[in-house]
Image 1: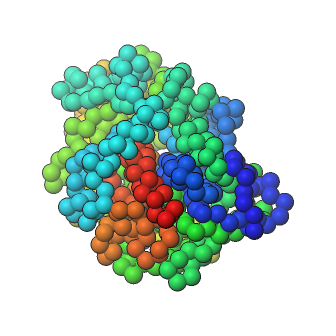
Image 2: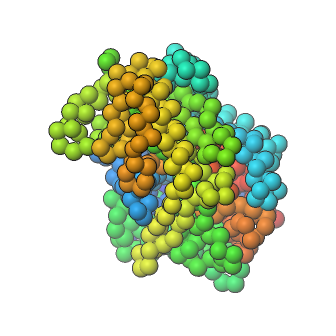
Image 3: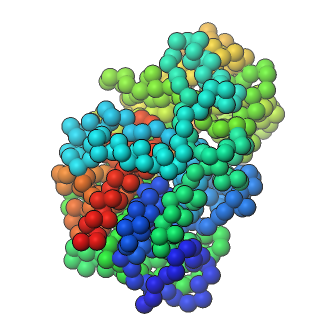
Length: 520
């Protein structure tokens, strides 16, 4: 048994089986895993980060969608719910989802944290404790609010439409430094302007002695009694598709699982982790999204500039109805064509007008109503691959319909000459007088395009073991003494904002506590 050297080791290069001992294994290198590894390594602990995705640097990011989706996204960008009704966009690389997200940074709303206290028995995390961690991460990642003059035409159309309708909107904060407004955030930043984990906290961790093992898929945690004794992984080939045959065995004192809201519960399920109250993989939230294409006479060129820089949360709190918030999606050719309904000449003719399209989205806030409990993660027999089931409640369908109507009104108020819904075939609205037709469209699985770029839950935190998988103080598994889960899977509900800053803040806070525990 040996120690891995600090820095990145690419598992596809291993010539023989590998057995490693260390203080802490961190599974996953995204916002949860990277921040945790950095904090623990700086505390003097011997840390090994294991990442299924590949190690890519700015030289490999060429702004090509045909390269980005196969290499940087789970399932090549084709991950979906089991019924194919929701397309799930989720990153997979050294740096995790932070490598491909659109740099949008919101702190966890304080009323959401309060709700966790009141409804989900979360007593070890509160707004006062999170605040300094948010401040520290915002400083480390250069999070700053976007000035209105830097908003591209795609986002400006949302701003203008909201302003004319009296809908409150604001520019957002982004984690960038020296941004060239290339518009390729979702494909990996070619100039290292995006302050992702790839160029910030992971290098910080490696400078403190941490080792990162890429292209290594963790197959299971081996438990003896109430402890994890081994982490077993398979080395993958350079494409990240097939095992090379080399086995990796890690023997840590502690394990931190940070694989994200789908992969973390799937790993624990594959490992047979104790689940006496049937909580593991439950309450999985997707912030499901419906989209609207606003067509303008002038060119929008929605592939240029910061992908997201404007948002509206006016409809986030709707009482008995499911809330939603409004943002913008970039309009790149491949993403646009896959999202666009229609076949043959209809699809071709729409794509010819892609330079004139603005992409507006309404993001549903799940997990705050008793009949909107999110979905479940299970695993396939044999392969152990995750399965996501996400039944959409009637209350959510009403929210999608209402959000689609608001998006259409915003598009026309901004000057659009027509607006298309996400149905297939799309409903094409010619004026604001047509918006009522949205009520008559089918609102059911696979009848309208639904997307997810924000996955949360599945290993929810609660100090009541009957309600959650991990406790809140240190995100330790209720039944496994040396196992912690630190990522977005621990959120008891969705957030109502883009989740990356919430994961950064939570991870920074908890990792500081873990450093004290693990060194004692």
